[in-house]
Image (cartoon, rainbow, N blue to C red):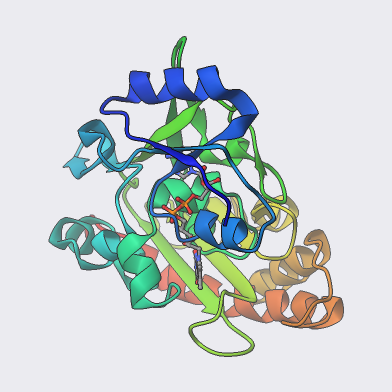
Length: 295
Ligand SMILES: Cc1cc2nc3c(=O)[nH]c(=O)nc-3n(C[C@H](O)[C@H](O)[C@H](O)COP(=O)(O)OP(=O)(O)OC[C@H]3O[C@@H](n4cnc5c(N)ncnc54)[C@H](O)[C@@H]3O)c2cc1C
């Protein structure tokens, strides 16, 4: 690893100014679990590392029944996994975190880094998009909010400008009769990055039989997390039926764009998408029927 200068801003504004000042030569450094690997491998040699870990405004997990859940960008995987507040309000997040990477990565790696790195083989984006999360972004000229979906542009590419920082993730309070299921599948070892990650979320009508809204979000099978919109359209506004779920799963399998790699061939991944959507949907449906204010 080549020498670099280590900068430690104490506020978001100061960090944005440093990023603007040093342009392409600077990089945000949060937990360092991803960035340090590419630096050690020599793929990327920033001249300045802007360590944001000492900015108090980027920390903390907050819950408000009206606004929903707010996660500071520096919240770590481990905090999500162990927070009593998360376990009470969004248990799906703490459950999935138990399977993310390994304990060392979970202790250091942050939610902001996980999203802003835009690596395709991750878990959180699928779940958060299915929950209709948005993000807050700060830049030298002010803040903006966008849906999480809009963040992802391509492999390792986001819509953030070089002098912008992802500051918060906002997850709205789920509407009544909502259930979500996430199935993570790893084809090599359980601590490997996922080969596939499939989130299915339903919000039901009062009759507990009709699907008001459906979200089918696929991870690791396209350059960015992918909403299977045809599958969603097939399920929405209709009675939940096993046959329809099978058809939706087949749509999802056609909609995704996997590539063959060490974790599986393109055909294998397409087939697994079909299998996982078929498995996740009934669980999400049952959870929605049993909704007690948490997902
Ligand atoms: C061995 C291993 C296994 C893994 N397995 C999984 C897995 O199973 N599931 C999963 O979801 N993930 C997995 N990951 C990815 C892991 O979640 C990310 O490495 C981690 O969350 C990145 O966070 P970080 O704080 O370490 O980011 P850093 O390494 O510090 O930064 C990563 C990138 O994001 C940028 N960045 C960081 N924070 C911000 C911010 N707030 N605003 C704007 N840009 C920012 C940095 O400039 C850098 O380009 C794995 C990683 C490793 C190394």
